Image (cartoon, rainbow, N blue to C red; front, side, top):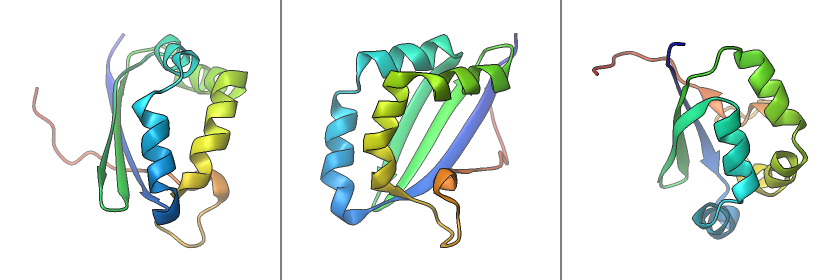
Length: 110
């Protein structure tokens, strides 16, 4: 099993900043459990102004199956119903599910 690094970014709606930060100050245990069960480790979200930057490492064996399992989880779906309205994509024409945009890795050092 190898580790794959993922980075992504989106913008935070200024009027939802306090709500988003409040939610993430006490992430629901079921959400954290599902993230771990789906092979995601070292998940971190940073903020600067209205930009959110997320980073995590995937250590599972089947990315697509793990993502589908997470998307089907009722607790995670409920969590997303609270966090998704706080986020917007960088592109004005980004589809609703494309708020977080993947970043290409340029360089890495272990």
